[in-house]
Structures are given as C-alpha cells and as structure tokens.
Image 1: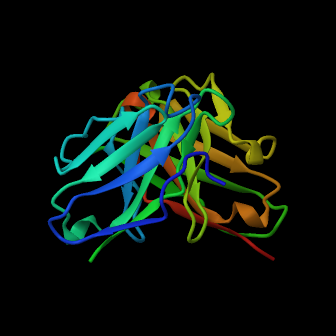
Image 2: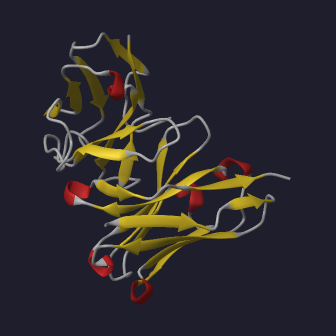
Length: 111
Length: 118
C-alpha cells in the first residue's frame, strides 16, 4: 500500500484539461512544500515535471501545473495532447518513517 | 550532459547477492544526495535508499534494512547498492536518481533489471 493516494486512472480528450490528485498526511504532503510529480512513459525512466509543489524544471511544458491544498496536491494538464498519455506519480518528503514516499501512480489516457 | 548509467543487474537466486553500480557524469557528484528507487514489474515506484553527498548519512526503506547497503565513491563519481539475502520480492528495475531541488529526484538513469528467482 502506497503512502500517498492517487486515482488509478484519469482520461480526457485532446485539448481538454485533467487534474490528478495526490492525498497524504500532515507528515508528508500537508507538512512540507516538497511535493514532486513524475511522468513515466512505458519502458522509460521517470522524469520530474513539477517540484516544490508548483515549480516546473526547464524544458517542461507550461501545460503542466501543480498546486496544493492541505494534505492534497494536484497536477493539472491543460490542452491535453496524445504525448501526455503516460503514468504519473506524485512523490513527497516525509518526516516519519520512510523519508520519501510515492503515490501508486495514475494512468492518463488520451481518448 | 548530465547522465546516470546503471549496471550490475541480472538473474540471481533467492538468498544470493548482487552489486549495482551507477556512473555519474556532467555534474559535481559529491555535492548531491543520491538515491536508489525500484519498480517491480507492472507496479509503481518505491524509494529504496538515499545517501548524502559526503556519504555520512544513509537511509533505507524498512524492507531492505540489514540486507542492502548504499555507498558511493566520489573520486570515481559512482554510486553503489550492495544487495544481500535477495528475495523474490526484490525483483524490479532499479533506478539511481539524483537529489534535486525540493527533495525531488531530478535526474534518473535508464534502470537496471534485477530478477530474483530459482
């Protein structure tokens, strides 16, 4: 059982916006602005697309945005494109137990 | 170019040992935390271990404590994971990753597959 809770799947049509949630506790997501989001295409290594809740690394499309409210972080993909079809994982620093925790992942399907 | 390249995976019997290596290039290796993350077939990501830039702090997920050892050789820009007493549930692709801003994992290797089976 993963420490952070994500929906198993989210889908949308090209051009639409979708949001993926990531729920933790006050010991991880809720307690620190150390939430990251990772994109993983089949057979490839994960790639960070959001760090510190809202920041995008250089080269990552501005269609990806992050936010947080309480112990729930969210990733929004706007203007959905076929290339966005992938698995998305949230990750967070945690102050108790395992020092870094991931969600179980969300499969994004572009209809 | 910033790059991480893992090696050392393979097929090992339960109870056996393997040593994974990760060669780093393109950045000042000794100033970064480094991590091992694994992904079992068809499953999600699991953080395994972390080590500070100077090697003086190490952390492990409970399931590998006492069996796995993370280490680094800063002179050779290399990260290691010594895995002993391997179990079937250690079967996974193992990635090395660099600790980036906000405790993120900002650079990942391509992964190396470890299969534990008799």
